[in-house]
Image 1 (cartoon, rainbow, N blue to C red):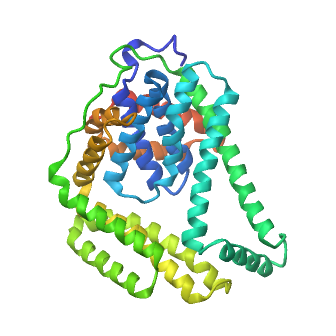
Image 2 (image 1 turned 90 degrees about the vertical axis):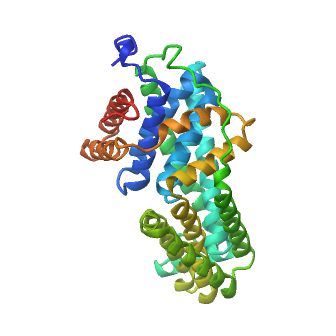
Image 3 (image 1 turned 180 degrees about the vertical axis):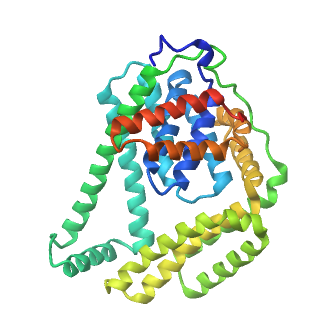
Length: 382
């Protein structure tokens, strides 16, 4: 539907679009199939916000959306929607200023590549154990596969870089194409729909104990990263076990996804030891450390619960109230608290993506149709 054909009454406001982003990013973090396309719906919503209120307001909405998804399900699989959250508001604002496809592609590609570089650096330094271990593991895999690929440090690093470049190019092209179609189809909001009020976040005094818990976890991370010895890991594991017990049944259920991510990272860290590229004891310590890094973060979310995480976020927004987007995030955050609509809307989005024909055009249509439908329903709809 074109912008001229869309009735003004059907134009979703910023709150409705932020609700769409929350539902989409939650669904993208949960589903194992079609996660990119599911999260792309949230990116479309944030790009539309950015096109209406500018990059600052768009990033405020993005921060509010990401905070709500963490409040609901913790840190598990957060890296997927982060790329959309980082790029969508900027791309929407650029498109509104008349920037062309090439400029949008360049911006999207740069953000994606930077994100991939951070993830790769974390994987190599923390999970694998450094460049030498990474190269040795790669050479061992080449040896086991009969030398199908070139060996050596240059080959390992170049192939890793090419993989990141290819992924950044492909996903950027799809992302920009879908965003441009979504922005072309969207009607501009009126004055009420196109503004985000600037609100000074209220500091959450009741979150002091949670802040102390966060600092304990941060210190534990620093110690584990600096000295991943067995006594240190055992002490942190005991703390995680105590925190898990304190979280109670509901908190422990919310920690399961985080535990799954921790196990996956632990297996990745154990791989070089299994291949014989590094001493097995070193690999085992890094595997336990990877598991504890995620588990300790999940414990905070399990003990705090969604409302506790929201209080922590309110305190952080108050401390950062002079930062661009912080006040806009504080204004939108209360309206994004999960309600009855979030789960059924997430399931509906996943179902539409899975039922669509496996082609870019069909998947794009399914995503954009859902975005329009859900944005008009808005938060709190039944």
